Image (cartoon, helix red, strand yellow):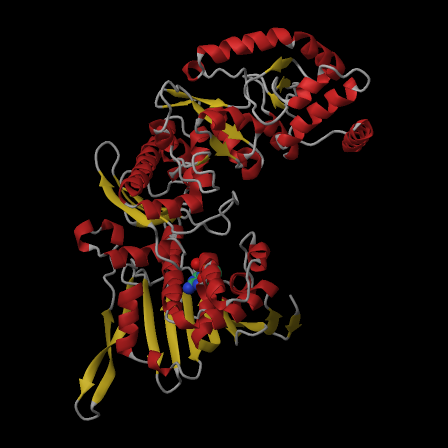
Length: 637
Ligand SMILES: Nc1ncnc2c1ncn2[C@@H]1O[C@H](COP(=O)(O)OP(=O)(O)OP(=O)(O)O)[C@@H](O)[C@H]1O
């Protein structure tokens, strides 16, 4: 940050990302300019919540002004709007940090995704959170006066900026605690200088705010023939906790606006569930599923989860104990009637009440997802695209609800052979062939590697569907999910292929005959490859390929071993089995090869490894062998 300090006033430069954000926001969000009011009121409300929480331990913070509220005013002559709160306020350092930098992790990466296309970027910025900086959509100068609760009156701060490259901060005297934001409106924004307009915006976007949002009452003046502002205050919003109101009194519109406040989101939510739970543990939950993934979904430190309230008093943001990690995309509020007000994060971890809330909230969300599956396939598809990968973690993480989570999973499969993940395990079971007892899957590094895996050949020939798993997390899913609805999940690349009733007698007999016939060749290949393979055997898995690699039932699959290696973890390496196709011309040819047998065997192994997405230890030797063999063939012909 650049500095030009004078005695009390100094000018500081915005962090680069803030400059970028400001520029984009002014241009791409202009058509949504009214949201600035919602954002500033949302911040004011959060500031009041924070004060109320800190005051639980230190009542003096209320000073002589215990009634928390937000005031909106306007001055036609000066062309300004003001948003005032008596919440926690900011110290000078906090103002510099909060209003001059963006502290979110992943910010730089986020900015690299902006395209310059206004419509797309507006969407992205919405996901990032627009917040305080949205003031500059309508204002060309913003003045913030603030004093942190508990600091003396001479420790006030005045922050001011034109939203270009820099801002100034100055220490000022300020009797009132909290924050006052004055927007000096841009040309053409004068329609906002209207009590009627502001009231309409507050009712539309901020009705659910818990604190009173007050404005000066207006009256019709017969002489002046216009509305005049009086000295009387009036509360414009309902000023009661939305989640505590009966469901029948809340409109969908109100639910949506409340979501934007708690979820710090710009778009409507996908779905929500609102319930009051009574019994051993009493609480209210209002939980939302967003319509899109936040940019930091995979960041373990991401914030803005579920807020915890105790008897309407805000206690903490992102109380991660309220839901398991695999539901970290959920936003909303839990308000408990049983927990003590002074509960800390440490106590939360051991609280029996929290355990009950967590299991209740988890069931509600899984139920909500079930409901989408049954009643709104389009929405579920959207959900799956945004959060499917996170939900998959639930199979490993949540033993109690494993079957329920498994039922919600969607996979790509050889049925449609497209990348789209839209096959549920129940769909798969419904399509099983007569006599089929298992759910077959293949895991690979990419969709194409899975789809074209040699291990699938016999399944394709027999018309048996195979799930095509190519997410890294899928390996984790299948190590924890052994069966679904009584049907075992089986990898087509592991263990001996036992198709059970799907194989007929004649096929089995032929296999036995071939095993005898090829015994000598198999031993010879094993001897040639040595430690690289555990066993070499005949297979009926293959129709087009000469060979493939197969892990033993309880060994780590080749794909998982590669994932672990890439993640820097040591995998217990055990050599794979090599299976060869007794009908393939290359294999038949090998029976009569003498001179170059070792090269043929090595190439067979290396190709099988490549075909399943593996990497060669010694690619140069592989290339040399291939060239030698090609040359020998061309000389022979
Ligand atoms: N009225 C206020 N009183 C006290 N602090 C405030 C106020 N407004 C903003 N802040 C501080 O400035 C920070 C930045 O605000 P901003 O609106 O940009 O982001 P946010 O609310 O944290 O997140 P998001 O933008 O995702 O909603 C806030 O986190 C808060 O610490």
